[in-house]
Image (cartoon, rainbow, N blue to C red; front, side, top):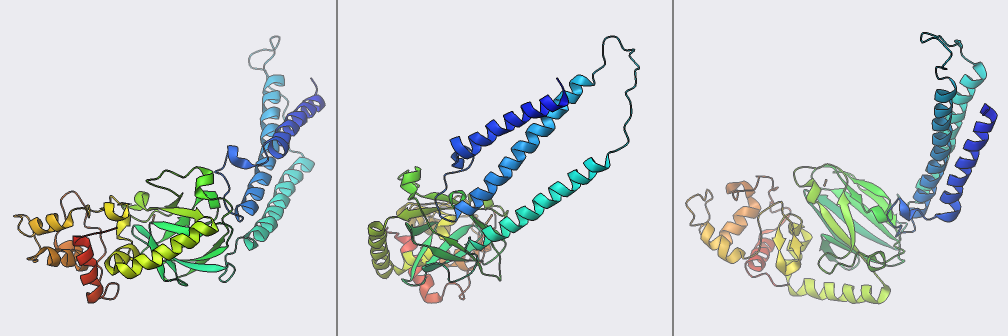
Length: 357
Ligand code: CUA
């Protein structure tokens, strides 16, 4: 077969693969998670373009490689030390394989900059703004219009664009929900923005496990010992469900301030507590704390100064290193009066000793 024919055959193979990519499977769900936000489209379009160019390059390079290995093999009638004719460059080839990829990169840069414009990386683009605070190792979400604070769980309304104002209190983290595509850094001292317009509810996509509903939100920046456990869920509700959730959340915060503080501080990111469905494993459990804390202060190995269960819990929040529960690391940040006031600390501890949902 001549080189011309081989190129024609490779062209047909590439064309078939491109037809599969653009015509038969145009949604990328065979290779990417389901797209569940309007902002996923510019990302997916770029991904598809790069995939198409990669397909053409891959078929061309691998096809010619195999062809040349075959036609320049040692023929049976040649001596074993036969030497092939040597070539010394080809200016047209050299120039074209330098200029063409460079041009493609320029085009890709322009398209990427345009796509970034569609991602809502500036404040004020959404209908609502939600504060996102990352800390080792929990996510807290703040709805300033209603005063609702969520932790470990972010509730969004279907079809309503929200701008997330993302910050961090300790080290670098990153906000990432693969179904929304866009990833954003959470950097101490900075506020960074992304806008998300959910186009599918979590149930539509199959994240309807009653114990852990919602799109998985993960931290995408290695941030310490609990990084892999720094997970949260994003619930996308239709308008009626969202209105109901909002009313309930407002009522609940007014009824139980201790619970609201626990949620706002993101304690459930690291600790388990059945009453609110928290399943953190970085720190010791918060179930049965009344009993555990009462016994702890009398334990032989106890190194703190507290005498009562209340004091023990306060000490564990203000000075976590005073006593480190066996089996866990001394990794918790101290919560001083600037993050939890003395009055709030009383409310929080009262609720921890008798946590109600
Ligand atoms: Cu936070 Cu990794």
